[in-house]
Structure formats: C-alpha cells, structure tokens
Length: 123
Image 1 (cartoon, rainbow, N blue to C red):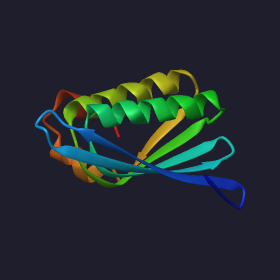
Image 2 (image 1 turned 30 degrees about the vertical axis):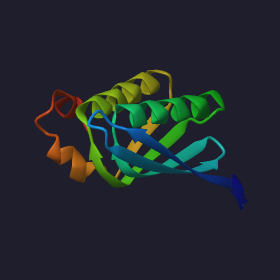
Image 3 (image 1 turned 180 degrees about the vertical axis):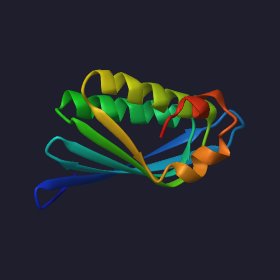
Image 4 (image 1 turned 135 degrees about the horizontal axis):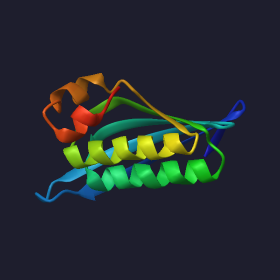
C-alpha cells in the first residue's frame, strides 16, 4: 500500500477459474481517504469476484468507511448473480447508513436489462 497525500492506494487482483474452465481476472485499485473508499475495477465480474468485492467492502465498512464508490469503467462483463449480489449489498449497506455508489455502470447494466437483478437495480 502506498501513501499519496492523505489518501492511501493499493492494487490487487483476483484470478478465478470459471465454470467453463476459463480464467477470468479482475483487478482492483483501492483508494482510501478518511471515511471514503474508491474501488476502481477492471475485468470481468463473476460470482466469485463479487464475493471478493463484498469481503473488501465489508472490511472497509468495519474500518469506518461510510461512502464507498465502485468505479466500473473497466468492467467488461458482469454475470446476473454478481449483479444481484451487489444490488443486495447496496440495499443492506444503505440500511446501516453506508452509501455504496456505482460509477460508469450504465453500459453493462443495459446489456443485462432482461435479468431480474437488473430490473431491481434503480440506478
């Protein structure tokens, strides 16, 4: 983890084998600044990746983050289960006073408009 001004930055990646035997990589660059956390994500998001994101977000909330931004500009694909998990996480955090905001999510969300999770997602 490297310090940049008052903010901290770190980069991590998760390489997970999907059901079809293909490997899908997701890279995460995390910026921390007080009660704010920004996770810039690149790559595909499958259920296993969404679970990694959920764990990271949970850690950040336990450490005091009250505003979490998921920058999805580099996300090429997200499966329906992951979309549902993240939408449920957003609702759960909101009830606990934590904001989970998705940036640059419109492009891939429109591709999933037929899924039940996408219909529930109000943003």
